[in-house]
Length: 144
Image (tube, rainbow, N blue to C red; front, side, top):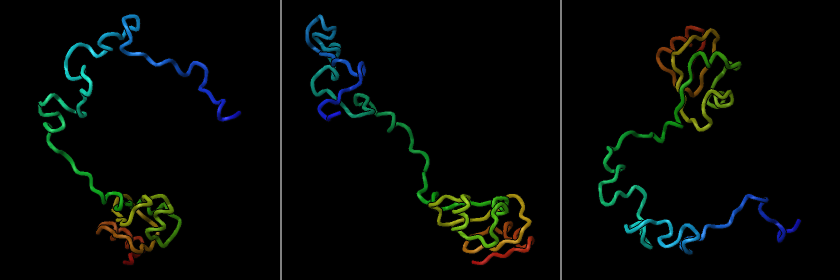
């Protein structure tokens, strides 16, 4: 095989439609553009969403919603998920390796959802008041 012998597969391409080349082509005279109007004329284009001068839909509707850029940096972990980790000392890196938080996470907070029986040590992880009580009741501790 040589570069000068490469061709499209059989039947994958077809000849282009020749617009404005007589009645027999099916697209003669107006060339499929219809009669009159901006879209029939050469250079008759307008931007997406243009409604002929009427206030466009995207400007008529109110602005709504907000997407925080910091959501990817913050993550939550429940007590149930902490009890699944085999390690006793848990920090941000441990949680990332276990797949409990996103790799982009910079701040993690443990929430009091579920129960924990084993004693664990949390390092550099924020904890809610309820989760702190549950961890300390199980014999664990939180190091800031």
